Length: 98
Image (cartoon, rainbow, N blue to C red; front, top):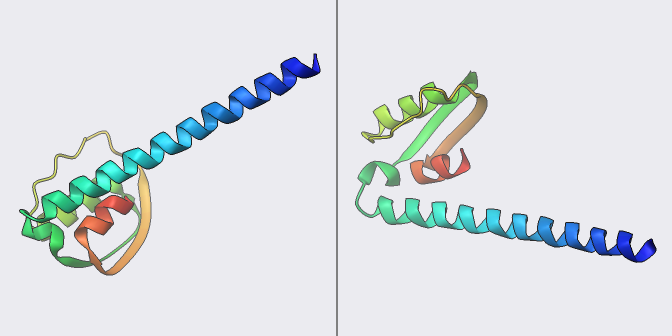
């Protein structure tokens, strides 16, 4: 019985570790893709000062794209509320953070 519990605990820790490392890889891919795109898209290299308090993520992204002449395809079902303040931050960093 004890061996079974230890085995199950070890397996669950293993799968949690895989999930965390997989998530980190995903973020690294996103960060690298934004960096690559910023070489050819000037709006991504610009700095921004944005503030939003309990506004929709959809509208926040639309405003960011409009201000910096970016083409962003935003899913209309995005309805999360966000509260953020960005001062003198590169657009790539804002997108990565969101």
